[in-house]
Amino acid sequence: MMKNYALKAMLGCLVVLLAVMMPSTAFADGNTSFPINFEATTNGTVTADKTNASLGETVTLTVTPAAGYELDTIYAAIVYQIQGGTEPARAPRKAPLFLNLGELTLTKVDDTHYSFTLPTEISGTLTPENIENVVVRVEPLFKELPATGFPVSINQTANGTVTSDKARANLGETVTLTVTPNEGFELDTISASMAYEVQSSGESGRAPRKAGLFVSVVSLTLTKIDDTHYSFTLPTEISGTLTPENIENVVVRVEPLFKELPATGFPINIIETANGTITADKARANLGETVTLTVTPSTGYQLDTIEAYIGYEITGTDDPARTPRKAPIYLNVMDLSLTKVDDTHYSFTLPSEINAELTPKDLSSIQVRVSAKFKANRIPGDVNEDGNLDIADLNILTNIVLGMTAAEEYPNADINGDGAVNTSDLNLLTTILLEKQ
Ligand SMILES: [Ca+2]
Ligand SMILES: [Ca+2]
Image (cartoon, rainbow, N blue to C red; front, side, top):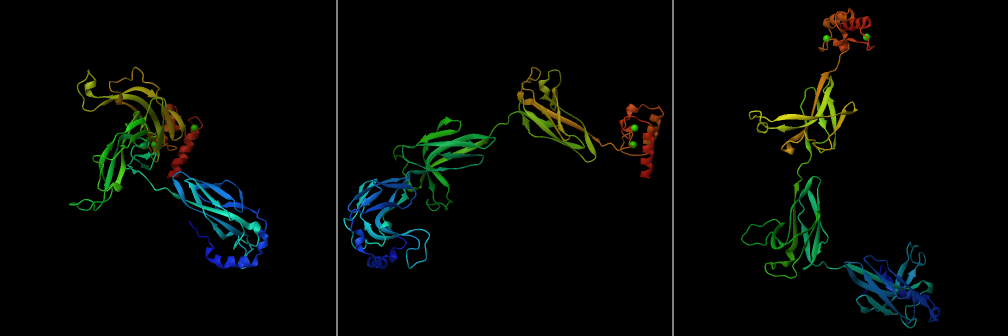
């Protein structure tokens, strides 16, 4: 149970040196009490039944490993604590060092208790220069407990994850699985078995296989706890088929499979249109849900009209008054009012419930439709809106100003945008046409 200190190698000569340098009379009083000092450790704790121990006194240690750990080694010694700068042979140090003055024999009382007894008198090397720096040093070390049970191996697949509440499970033990499908997916099937992995060279008469092929030896029954939790219990003893050649290869194999959730809501169909596009922020919408549309006119065009409505498709045989049709037709049942969010966005909200009108035989035939029209941007002076600036526009505008043609028929006739069609517009159009020459 010896543990190497950093300076143990130098101790022989150093301790001799200390013994020579230090007067033994410093220990004349046998009541000297030494503090018990613990080395910092992880994965467990050790406590003593006293904070100081005098010569001849017995100290009992309580050892408490953390879960999954056990005591590896424990070591106690009377040590001399060198403070920074007190050692002549060395440059000042940052942290104190401990020089071993005498190992103490540890007696195991039980699994969690150890004891040691301090010597009854000062002797030999136990004569440091500065008695205030002498302590009883306890150095425990913990190690991980060896893994037991069969490893739980989850064959993670796409579209979701499964986790186990334990990494290993023993015979008779229950394992709880947490199932987390990805968005838009649900668990399709899940199975568990005790299986062994076929090693690449394990099977005679076959070409070497890649690792990862599992042969099931015992099927395990899964119990559904709730929508996201399942559990199974391992058999209490090895029997029957659970006697593989190499038991070390047996694992608990969990095989989940996820599938896409069926689509919900009514499809949103954008009726294709020329000179621009409309996109919706969702492919399907449920009752009461709001859909936002993005309007993108082609260059030189602007939105003219946009509308949304809900209805359903009927096929020829649904409509008794008609002969069977080849293509289904769409019946518009309800207009959905559109709200302009900004110049390029509109939104509408589906009704919160299906009314009597909107009750086709097949609910899945209901769909939302969006249609839009785009028109060419107005060109100033293009009175007849044919896309050209020419003498035809001047003739129409002249007729309007002369009162021979109604101004209402030509919204583009008010070229300067002052709300009236008069000689000012005529002058402006003449200027535009002259500049165009
Ligand atoms: Ca024109
Ligand atoms: Ca005008």
